[in-house]
Image (cartoon, rainbow, N blue to C red):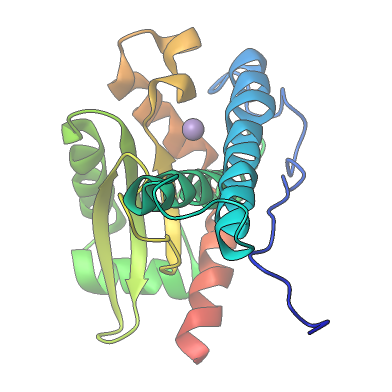
Length: 211
Ligand code: MN
């Protein structure tokens, strides 16, 4: 059976800008550690769990030698770590080129649902600031109701692979801000708004709306 591929591996995508492109809002040191350390670590972690699952499929690890829930937790945690970071990078633009108010379909939908961009921004910020521990705050497009929804993910969305149409994503793990902001997470959240790549968010929304 030459078409048997087993589970496929993941690759670290290129960072869409230089490591210092987000300064002064997010420092070069943070992006370096975050991308080359943490994101790469999730890709390597996902691939090592893929190897383990494939060994199970090939009969190289037998029943009793692994815990399936543990295997799935490790797999999904690392896959989501990889996917969510890929989105997080793309969802920011170099300082001076991002931020402001969104236009396009996303700007219209935000105004229609939330009343104004300012009200939406206040609610998203409140959600982000209320996240108790480690995780993400996102805006996603709900296809069923043509609806935007704000959500927080604890850790990496537990045991579900994050393939929702995420339009806006904020990393709130300490590694995303601590080197520069220490315990002042709300300052990081405020400054992150200056980096949002609304063009990316709008293109993504238009792609999923067409379906
Ligand atoms: Mn992160």
